[in-house]
Length: 120
Image (tube, rainbow, N blue to C red; front, side, top):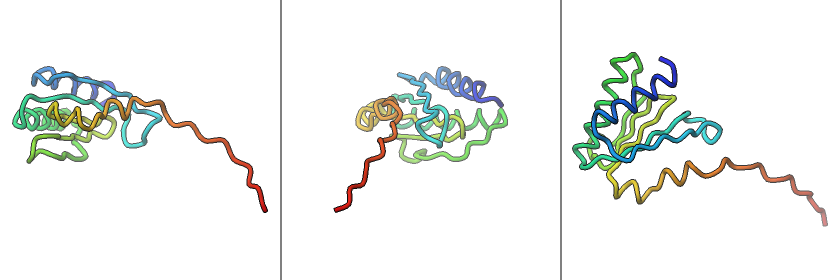
């Protein structure tokens, strides 16, 4: 499955599951972990878990087995790692606290200029 198809599968599933405040962050060049982070909110811990489980199931059904899932027991924050796409589903209060959108929307770091070494 192509990266754009995988991203669309995740977005379609989030829409079907009535996820809220969906954000797609292109993090290419900012991390080697993934190409896209998708962040969404659920209305309750049960909703967060259901969204993450459904995304994982549909991805696997489409031939993209998740590399891992986290947070499915607690339900405040669940993560589904699909390699090129990482999904974070959170309760709104958890999402506000961690502010992943602000963290990953920052400009890519720029290398510092080399400093001259002065010997005494």
